[in-house]
Image (cartoon, rainbow, N blue to C red; front, side, top):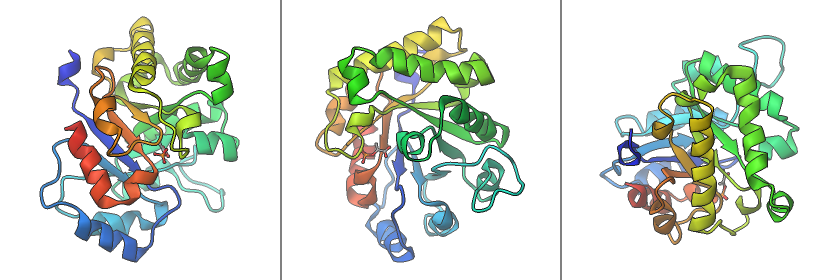
Length: 251
Ligand code: PEP
């Protein structure tokens, strides 16, 4: 598959933001014609049903921001991937750097959640990326390769065919600092080369999206790069008009 066959993919990570009112306002600000890319809204778990019903009939899909590894059991406060599927989600963000940093999710835990998402029939949006220190030490590619290896070791390389990879340099998330298009492209190409080396089936067809302070102002130049297939958008996805414009830029 050539790069031109990859359909653009843009996901909104609302993080821990939103109210019922915000969801209604968001839907009324959403354009009449939904841009022709794969669009996924990942609201907080508690709003998933509300968001789904408000966006009913629009060409938009839904995801969750994290899941527990186990399918059910005594895990007070947690949510299983199977529950996300049951509620109509099709995607699960896995390994977001905020989960890794604030909730202690190791590469092994992330791999467990990746496997759980696949088991439940969800498509994982697998986040990988280096910290600023790691980049300054010239270790960006090694760090990302190690994060991918954890998935390969636990789930097998073939499972990477069925995910979307989000390259999200930690230093660019929520900071207003974005990787330059050339920096991002270099990492995306390195990730794709690794998929090819590992024998991942249809590696050329795996969507690799960029995340880290994507806005309308910087999206077009990022999307112009050959291996940047869309975006995982945090802050800017809370504004329906801005997020829709980012989706248009990816189309
Ligand atoms: C994110 O949360 O995945 C993200 C990329 O956030 P932001 O766009 O705010 O940097």
